[in-house]
Length: 269
Image 1: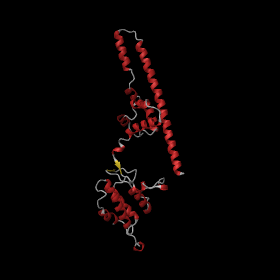
Image 2: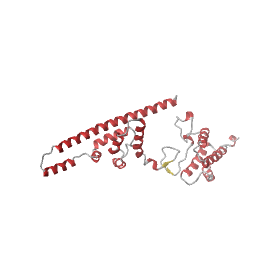
Image 3: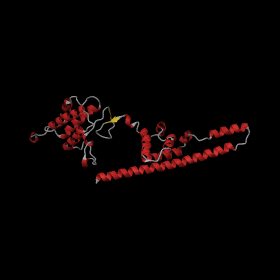
Image 4: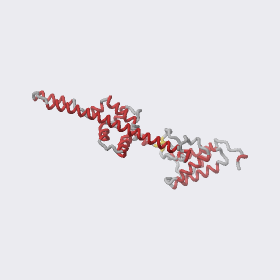
């Protein structure tokens, strides 16, 4: 039932975005009609000109100066703000961007919007148009990789690694699980999901298996909180590019686990 509700919510969100997209297109069509009307008026004035050659030259020059161009439309702050607001509702641009950033990346320039307007109204073409415009917004975001331990992590890494809390299945998918909230059973389940994933390369698979076995042996001696710190330290070394999955990590085991108390001997079976 939860999955069905989530699917319905996603479908509702997609339909809402499509509706907003078509409304934006209608507004652009109206604006384009206004521009065409202005062009027609300018053309009528130029055709009805009966002045002398000297005055005709100055009149043509004046008409040329008042001819609307794409650059003129870009400079129209009222119009660009309306377009920016509509596209922002579709999630195609970041409202926090400055005007200079928006202009430099041409996120909402009219030449691109006119090309979008000329496309068909089919769902597939609409999705393609949205992805083409929104891809420019995400250019800066994809230039740097972030650690997989938390989506909000700000530190840059060379090789982002997968963490077990992001690979849990069944009812745990919809829960707000974090790496810190995992218990030993869920940790093992998530790690085995990564190991059994067909996309996992053999070097990483073997390295994760060895690390998991080592953690299971150490769990007889140390509390799981310390073992999670050890696991995170290993993946951190790999993310920074200092180590690989086929390297030894005994130095981390000594450095990390020495900070944690050992289990009482009565609990060790």
